[in-house]
Amino acid sequence: MGRWQPDSRGRLQESALALFAERGFDQITAAEIAERVGVTERTFFRHFADKREVLFGGSDYLKELILEGVVAAPASDGPLDAVVRGLQVAAVLLGEGRRDLARQRQAVIRANPELHERELSKLADYASSVAGALRQRGATDVQADFAAEIGMTVFRLAMAQWVESNEDTDLPSVMQRSLADLRALTVDT
Amino acid sequence: MGRWQPDSRGRLQESALALFAERGFDQITAAEIAERVGVTERTFFRHFADKREVLFGGSDYLKELILEGVVAAPASDGPLDAVVRGLQVAAVLLGEGRRDLARQRQAVIRANPELHERELSKLADYASSVAGALRQRGATDVQADFAAEIGMTVFRLAMAQWVESNEDTDLPSVMQRSLADLRALTVDT
Image (cartoon, rainbow over all chains, first blue to last red; front, side):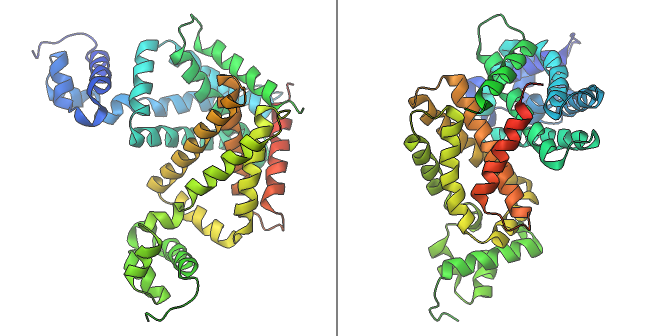
């Protein structure tokens, strides 16, 4: 107890997800998470502002990565291709994380309407920032909104597929496949 | 005061939207809405379970309409076309309403993160029900999820365009144009 151990943040996150999955997000306190890891509650709050940050921490950084990817896309890229480039940067980062933890996180969020609404709102915020970046690249308002929203949908569905899949596929490849699925679906018939 | 007047529900809705827009959703009580219309608070609660229902009432009915449209789509329709058929049924109904009220409603929802999250969550629920209806029509899981989500995106962006536009276009036509915009955007380049 209280002795310094490496990667407290990672272990706190892992324990928190396990506890949320076992007993529900609302039932768990920061003190319980800390106790399971063998650290003090104060240590928990040194790493996370609150319980929700265990699930949503890092999302500003992710948004920055996506936006940088969009901005860096070649001028020849259409709006949707530029969005996908940005999302691929995020997919590489997220895909390096542990899939079992991503799966637990997703299950916890889906089981709790308030968390689910927050997740959707976070993605809507990404879409709105991405649309802004596309307008700066010269996309019209309609193109920018559409490409950003469609891109986020591809991203969200790819994440869900990757998380649920037992195949040994990496997230960026799943994203590519999702984009191809989308294109197949929207071909005018 | 208290005298019976026609269409209390419509007048309550109109006053509520005006008050929400003027002073913010959280600042307004049911009593104030009723007072502006000249009815009692009790009359307000005969028409609406709470303030939020002024904004979100009727959404179950709308979902049923969308689902009926999807189910009734010809077997030859692909998944996305079937979704669009369902959404067109909803667009016809919504497009008959007053655009100025729809515009106020949207502004109120956008100004309040909690309401915005609820709106997103409602649309996510539509998408999930629509995906179920598509699976019953023989779509694969991936096709169903994608077509449902993409359809809801088309719907949402078309609503936003219609509400903000000063053109004399009807909502179903805006939906058709949005679908064409989407197809143009996803053409493989």
